Amino acid sequence: MPSSDVAAAVEVLRRGGLVAFPTETVYGLGADAANADAVARIYSVKGRPRSHPVIVHLAGATAIKEWAADVPADAWTLAEAFWPGPLTLILPRSASVPDAVTGGSSTVGLRVPDQPLALELLEAFAGGIAAPSANRFGRVSPTTAAHVRADLGADVELVLDGGPCFVGVESTIVDLSQGPARILRLGGLSVDDLSDALGHEVRVVSSPDGRTPAPGTLPSHYAPAARVEVVSVYEVSERARVLLSDKHRVGVLAPTRIDDLPDGVEALPPAGSAAAYAQCLYQRLREADRRGLDVLLAVPPPETGIGAAVTDRLRRAAANR
Ligand code: TXA
Ligand code: MG
Image 1: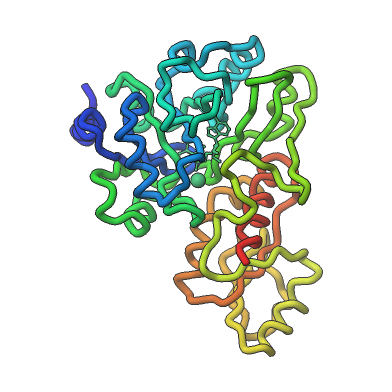
Image 2 (image 1 turned 60 degrees about the vertical axis):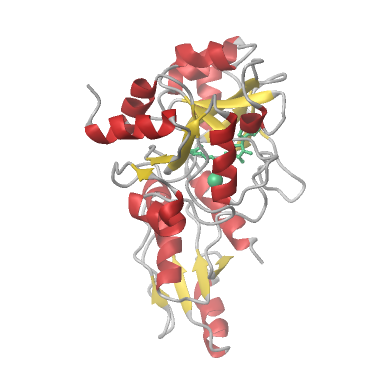
């Protein structure tokens, strides 16, 4: 028997409404993926361009066949190794997938989230749930139910509260729709994890400016109101001094405490290891705005494992202006 919250959420989805729900990565803004009108509401609430496809969330890997027209062996390998988990597979779409979900493209993005409440919802709903991150377009992704309410307010009928997301950055997106697997977006699952599972190196597709593109992941994204600057641990104090002398309100986010920061700088709590940094990243970007900072100087974690995804998000946040 689903909990009463989940039963209410299923009701909302069945009549074409929107439900925000937790995943291990970030909160999603969900609609019945088979209902084109319901999916269209996601776009209007988010303020997101229609051409950006949304990921379809499934209760388990067996449902792949209902949504994808062709499932290469590598897709089954990755689904088996990492689902439920922070991995989205891009596959050729099956004919029944609404254009509203795919943005008119010939592919569909599928993922099984690793979050008990999400899985309970998906099982009870017994269908695909289309869901982008539950934030307004271009803004910081939500990692708590309170973030969703603060950002979307009354535009979302029901918010399932599963507590803070334990991964904290979005899923890794792997394109298997043509040729060998390619990573379109860095995320919760590392490049090495994917390469190990497939037994060969998986390429990260880079755009000319060196950032990873998924159609719809613009260079400027994940941005708080504060200006973000990505700096090394060696540059941060000097840069802070310059900004302070220009009368800016300056904050610092870094993996560990930095001892020689000038007076007047607001040091946010240290982010810790790469995994801990991922977990708290969006919370800290919101914290920068809550404090009314003009500039947040962000020292990224080492770019190994999930650290690569954290660095990618910081660069996108920094590309805001
Ligand atoms: O972790 C996540 O992936 C979260 C949770 C809620 O599952 N979802 C998420 O969705 O980050 P969204 O919409 O904020 O980002 C999904 C990205 C977009 O950049 C979109 O363009 C890309 O995935 N995408 C979705 N379907 C695609 C497709 N068929 N082909 C290429 N890119 C696709
Ligand atoms: Mg998003």
